[in-house]
Length: 60
Image (tube, rainbow, N blue to C red; front, side):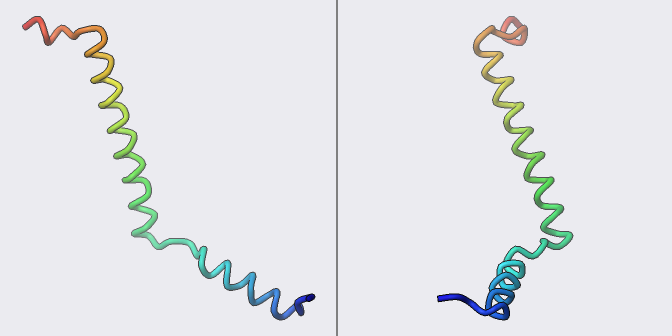
């Protein structure tokens, strides 16, 4: 069954409303979360590198 243009426009508008841009707070949280994940990844990579090769700190 074909939809009228009015019905189709309402559906598109409702989809846009559900994907509305987040506020300033949400944008701030996103970069902070990204930085946290990146820092955790770097720390894990460093731990793996130190355990695989041994670090100078082990000698002291």
